[in-house]
Amino acid sequence: MEYKDMKMDDIIKRINELYKKSKEEGLDDSEKEEQQILRRRYIDSVKSNFKAQLETVELKKRN
Image 1 (cartoon, rainbow, N blue to C red):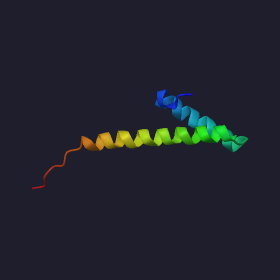
Image 2: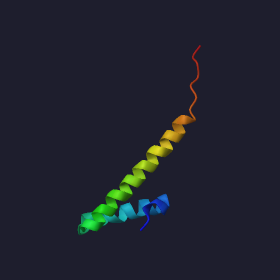
Image 3: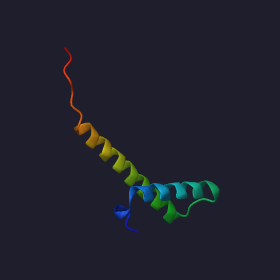
């Protein structure tokens, strides 16, 4: 599966599915690896979006 082509909503949905499965029955090694990849993809996206927001912020001078 190409994780870089997945929509963020699908990534979040799959992360939640894997989390639920990990609590109920556990994950096999390939599912653990998938979970790590998806979490990293999500975190990288959040960081990128936050950085883009910060770049648009302008400081105002105080009088």
